[in-house]
Amino acid sequence: NNWNIDNISIYSTDGTSGPNPCVIGYNFYLNGVLSAFTPDTNYVIPPNQVVYGQNYQACVRAVYGSGYSNQICVNFTSKFLYPARDLTAQGIECNAYLTWKKPVTLADAPQILSMTPREVDPNSTTDVAPYDVVLSTPVNSDNTDALWDVLFGWNCTPASGPGAGQAGIETAGDFIYTSVWGGVNAGPPWFSKYNKTTGVLVEAFDIPGVTAVRDMAYDGQYFYGGAAATTIYKMDFTTKTLVGTITAPSAVRHIAYDPANSGFWIGDWSTMSLINATTGALIAAGPAQANAYGSAYDNDPTGGPFLWVHAQTGTPADRVEKWKITGTTLTNTGINYNLGTVPGFPSGGIAGGLCSGDVGTKFALMALVQGTPNFVCALELRAGGGGGGGSTPAGLVGYNIYRDAAFIWYKPHP
Image 1: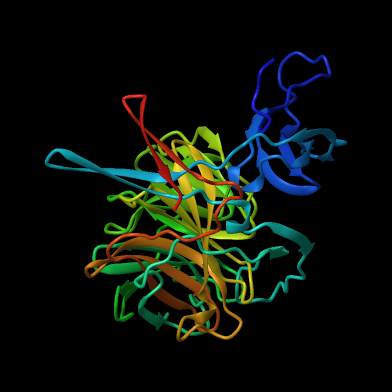
Image 2: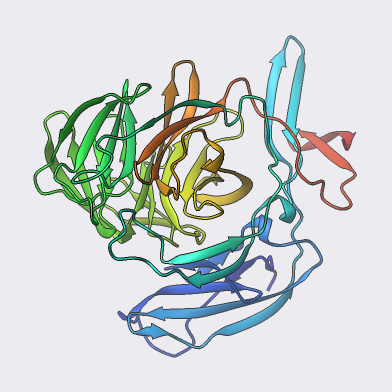
């Protein structure tokens, strides 16, 4: 058969008819490192994890409710070449101006070097990931002067005691809402409402039937969140009521609403899935994550949309990571930022929830940092467009340009 080597399909060979109800899904390993978990029997290796002409070993292990199967492995040589990115076209009179970004290479994306169990204090005031993850240091492939400008930063109220364990965050209009995860500083109150830019507490409140929500999402009418279990709560923050629930195929710690797919990107520390926003049905399995806590949707008109993930990774354990959404597929862009450099970052702070939205005339990420006190900050994403940068793939000599599928021009690189 003709097949792309970076698109590996796994099929059952045990002769059983129908699915085994004890099988939860499959762990996929690339060169001995866990790359993804998928409930399906196929997986596409992200382009930034393979290099043209290099040899790899791909392995799959079935995940049961009671443990793991033995691995099956296959060796292959990658025949994938990194594509150009984010093509845009602008028509001016009789001309069409095309711009694009050069390919993102393996060196532009962080690679998981190791994962070791982390000792978690049961009396901790923060919700801590169960693993320490060491990543390689990537090159940021897109930079502008405006990117990562700090638009505001303020401490949550109260600093300690009941209701202080705030972790989730979402924005609507001129306000930011936070949720309490539990732990030592559990609610009530379980939710708080703040003035977006000043951090002045407007009110603290509860939603009957809802506690311990981590990250949150907003679809323009209702708020959503999970308590690290398979139930997604659909909430009305105006009437302070639980509107309904959605059953997800996996635990929900991080969640972001994707209007283009009418769904949510959800998952726990190491998982990512796209599910239907109404039924909770699985739309697509995403790539493995490293200590993900929050996520936010970014409908960037230049090359977007994107999904940003707030992860307890790095030193300190708090950074945002940018993923490209192509249809229902996520690809790591290699762009990330550690929040430890933000003025006011609390000592020992770790990643919490994440949301996105307008702050004045800017579009920004708004992150909640778990600490004592908890800290909210806004990081500018856009103020006039992106840029080039990143590593140039070895052997890249230029680009062919086509109009209506017909070749019309060759453009040397750069």
